[in-house]
Length: 317
Image (cartoon, rainbow, N blue to C red; front, top):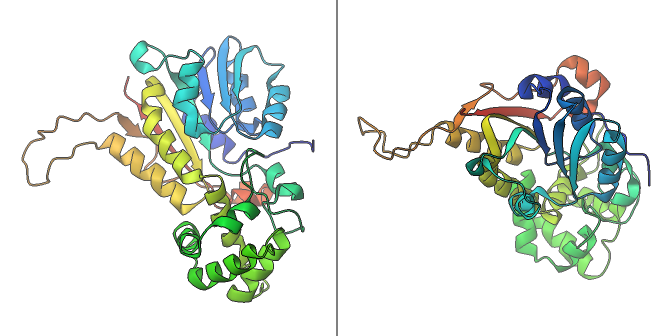
């Protein structure tokens, strides 16, 4: 297994937002190599508790090794956070209604650097490799997905997930070649993208970048996982619990922003009514008016933080 080194993005901002304290209970639903988790563990130890989700077995192994030296109670769950509610209950955790829950929760929705840099994972076209893209390393690969998906569905995925204007022409081209078994590697897919979208120009992103992003989101069902997490997480927050979410894609950030707005402003009454009659109570408030982004200093050390957006919410006591 390659060494799982990852620079956690917006780390100082996450620590400021979550404000971890000794003995608190922390849930990390995208544990990765425990970059954020190790920093938080330093603050909640001793006697704190850390629960970590990650569907990537390499990440889970790396995180367990990194966190082994802390005086913490730890639980590691190899699963997507789409199943967070079910998995926590199956392990005997109690939610807020049962006087349980978590003091802090973090979701870092981006890929880890080792996932990108390991060519055999198929997330990047920088090196020719099998077209995989599975975060869990199990189930349907990206190549298998493209071989079965219909042209209309793929065009919708390319347009909705990555705003690709040539989505229909590109979907037609990819499906034609995939049905013939000619989209098995990252280079083959990148070449098809260039044939429709043009070849790379100096100073501009590679045309295939957004295509790979859209297909990765579809293969891993990422938006469904985010929606399920946002639906379930309020039940798992202790009174005065703090939630931080880092997104890297406009579709992710839009979901997070809209959910936090609903939690803070749940009233569904028509604007013309003088008083609220739906009696829906705010769950808490956001921790910043706008999303927090990386500083120039952080970008100089970690260019992959460029698209990161951090939003936070504190739930009512």
